[in-house]
Length: 493
Ligand SMILES: [Zn+2]
Image (cartoon, rainbow, N blue to C red; front, side, top):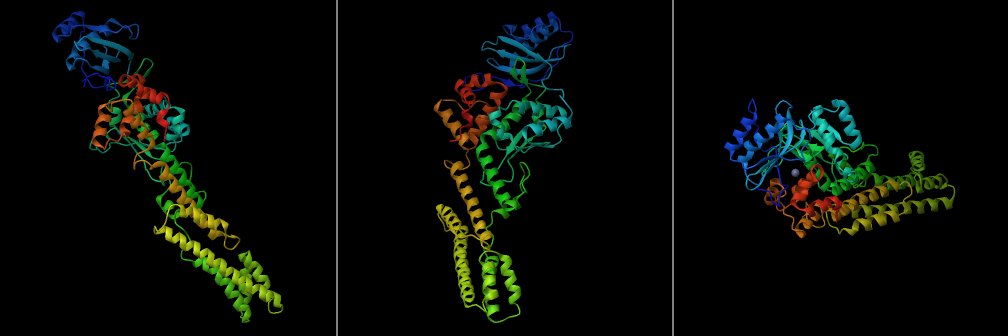
């Protein structure tokens, strides 16, 4: 690949590592330049100041050494500079193989831990509300913290609640994409967690070979890899966060206090919470049976009468009133007729309630239209939901609300194309409208062609470069940088 408007314009850590000759004299360098056939080898005046003579020799020798890898290319490489250690160097070759080396900085970026493991974990989990799992070293956590510090505040809601796991290795996929890191999440109206970023050993293996950024803002490749996964989290944030809020409301509505912080929530809790209770009418039927049985027991002077009356008293509402009349009904005709009317009223309410539950049961097996949940909820709300019926009506309303939130989620997030988020579709639309080629990186292109022209890897690649090296995005297409600078990557509709 050569530099064109269709890529970030450089390769990171792609050159083989070499040892400098010793001693590295001006004569040795001159011989190297001649034998390499390079026409011009220059040190960029925009390099760091105070370049030592040994460093100059090293840079020119390396320009000659690496010139064989192709005209028209740019490499960002960590290379040996002699006694001063290693440096971050940009090697540029024009089409005639004239070479320029820019010494950006010395040392390997972020190669020393900024604090202990415990302190870093605490900092990160508190600031970003994430969970950190697996065996992270202090240096790796330093890189993770730096990566997250680059995420704009407006995107931090996408990071909240994520698990960030350190794993040894990851499965290779068809386009060789998930070897370094991966973001996994559910795209459904109910989810057990907000998602998980896994980072493998390989993500850190290139950190002593290449770098991103410029000047004081230089980052190891792993920082970009992590931000690529954060890019996926940002792209999928609206459906994930809505689904999470749905799930939390659903589970808390059934079992208050079970959802701690950002989860995770067990599938069993979700499965339990989305059920419509009382469908078999056992509990609902008990209320009506109590009224009828108590009335009959008094009528027949049964020894059970006193106990049933006291149960009616405890049940509340109409049943409490019924109990008062039952006590007097043998002596007072007015109470006898009132008790009989109340038993009829309770039976009528039982019929009304079971009608609504039968309606709900029909909706469960799928004989419904979307608006029916709203209709059923409205009818349940309109019922005289005093005790002892209230829990049954509340259950119907709770259950309809869950269904209505699921419908809203589906309408909001899968309205256009299944399994594609609004942010991703907007991004692809914008890229097409502005003739921004998908080949920002080899990866964004290969994923695009392998997986049904989905732009999610393109989005994640662009997002990561925006944060570690915005000029790289601009090198690809200025409109691409503009998209992120304007915050258009957060547009969901
Ligand atoms: Zn990806």
